[in-house]
Structure formats: C-alpha cells, structure tokens
Image (cartoon, rainbow over all chains, first blue to last red; front, top):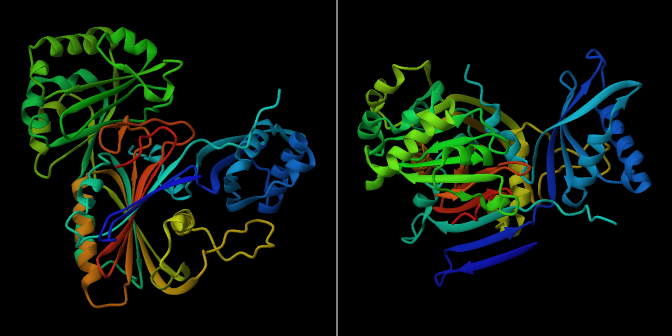
Length: 129
Length: 354
C-alpha cells in the first residue's frame, strides 16, 4: 500500500492516492451442477468451498478466512469476500473443484473486483432486447 | 520453484476532498472524465421518496439508441460526420463486445474514434496505431485512435480514405452499437438509423426504500481518506442489499458497518441504468446540491457513477482494459456545508484518474 498526499495552502483541497490498498477482494461466483435440481444451503455452499481450499492447500488453505456475503439458493450464485492476499488461493481452489457429492460441477467466476460497489454496476449485465 | 500467490492485481483509489465553494475545485471536469456511464445510483438518507425536482431530473436523462449489427465504417459516413460528429453532439460504444477478447469501438463526444483491436484485426486494418499499454510485452492488442475532426480525416482526405477502405473492404468490422446524442439531436441520426435494425431505449430507473439501516457516522467522525475502502464497502453492501448485521463469530459472514456508526430510520436508494451522458449526471449533481441546501434532515447525499467495463477509454482519453474486472467508477459524497469527498476507483488496466 502506498499513498500520495497533496494538500493546497488553504487546506480545502486534499488528494490521497491509494495504490493496491484494497484490504479485500470480492468475487461473484455461480456453481453449476450436473443435476440442476440439487439444493445447497448457504452453509453447505460455504463448507464445499472450504473443502476445496483444504484439498488444494491443506490445513493452511482450510483456515483461509472468507465470507459469503450473499447467497441465492435457487441460482446457486454468491458474493464472496476474501482478504486480498488470499484471492489467488480462493480462486484457484474454486477452479479445481470438479465434483460435488459424486456429480460433476464447476464454479463460474462471473466478476472479481477490489470494490464491492463494482459488483453492483457491471455493464456486461445490460440487457436491451 | 515456488510462486508467491499472495499478490492481488493492481488497483488505484483516488480520494479527493474539496468544497463546491472553492474556486479551484475541478469537480465539473472530473465528472466529465467518464464519457460512457452505465449506472448512476443515489443514496439519500432520511428520505422515503425522491423529491420532485430530483425525480424530474432522473426522468429527463437522455434516451439512447441500439443499432444492431452495424458496420463500423458507417461512423465515417459524410452525412453522419457533418450532422452529428462535427457538432460534438454524439457519442457511442460497441455493445456486447468484451475488451479482453474481442474488438471494441468507442466514438467520443469530442469526435475521436477509438478502436481496441486484437493483433490480427489490427494488421488487417492497416492503419497506424500503437500497442496497448497493458500488454506491451506480448503485443497482442492494439489501439487505433483517430480524431475525426482533424483536417486529414475530412471526407476524401488520405487518412479518411485509408481508414474507410480498411474498415469497409478489409476488416469488415460489425457490432451492435449504442449511440447517445444531445437532447433534440435525434434527427441527425435518422439517416444512419434508417438503414439498420435499431431501437430506442429509455434509461431504466429503479428505487428502493431502506429502513433501519446502520450507517457510518459521516458527520461526527470526519472519516479519513484511509477509511475510503471501508466506506465504499459499506456503500456496496447497501447497493447489493447485503446485511451488515453480523457478529465477528458468524460462520457465513463477518461483514459489519464501519465504526463509529449511527442508525438511519429510512433511506432512499435510486439507480438509473443505460448509456448515460455525463451532462445528465452533472445536472443531477446540481440538483442534489439544491436538495441539500433545503432545510431538512438530509445531512449528506451520495452519488455513484459506474463506467462501462468494456469501454476502450476511461478517465478522459486514457486507455482502458480488463484484467480481472474492468471497474471504473466514482463516488461523490456531498455534505450540507458544500464540501464533498470524491472517490475515483480503477482496476488494473486503467490510467490514474486526474
């Protein structure tokens, strides 16, 4: 993290530039299952991701703190929050999670950002037809 | 070989603080920096319905056009140049093209045409350009930027003929295209629209009333610029309808509202989506200032403007791209005493906003 502070003489104007200072990253994910009718509760969803972290990174991975900020049980989409230092670990274990209870599955990472606000204004979701 | 996996991609957040009363404030020019705005969202505390003057501004946002499968050389049509581009009344952006994998086109209000092309398309087009700043090592994306108002680009000129031939005979670039224009400037587009499948769209407005909302104490605590990330996180949680009422031991989420906090009885969240002109956003800011001047319980107002993820330009003429996310947005937090906090946020493939 680094910051550059400029202040004018009157003290009214102040500019601070924060580089790579985001404490968290936010990930919008969707779990695609072979059997569409399978139901997953929010707790099972989080547990499943933790199991993926454990299988790839061991106990250290399983201890990685991340939050499920919002979960849609019908669409199996979720907003995750993870410490910026843990983003690559979380993302890679999501990618390598290939089966849920003996059925093929895949995590689609829809959007990743250091700002939660950016996830609410994704222009790729603009539908005009 | 071990690889350090703890580094997240680059991001920049600029925090400006100034006052509307300060003669040197640059807020107007800063708001004009994002030419292609996708979403504007407002958060008004202690408000349950939009005041009529704000409501009328929100409803008066200009409509925009979607032209389906338009050849890009149509933007060089002589009639279109004379009636729309030279007047500075039109801007546009390719729609449903992803800048990290496809060709993207933007027509800026100052008459500059910007093409972000993959290597093959760039070589086929045969027009001068430069490698994208963000992958200068691999050189697999190129940017062609031409000023259509320049004398060399006048219809019939050498530069004009070269670009027109490249787009028409060699590259055959066609995309869905979004166009917005000055209010009342629609007539100048009829000649273009009549030849393609098109539709006119109004910006979509949606609003929500929030009750019993925990909110950072913005007035009493004087938040420091270093707290900007936690403020923006809270704002994102409000926008995405995420609960901040968690305890630190909660299994699912430990997201909480930044301390110190207060409780808002009610708040109004309004959002507008579409291709929105910066001038309309500017009018909205003026109305918000008037709203704050009126005696009432509203101590502050927040406005967030998201740029298009796949725009080839952002923050003025700067090149824009997508690495993990193409975020380019700003948040303006305005107070009753005319001071404001402006947060300009960018992702990995963006210049630093000025």
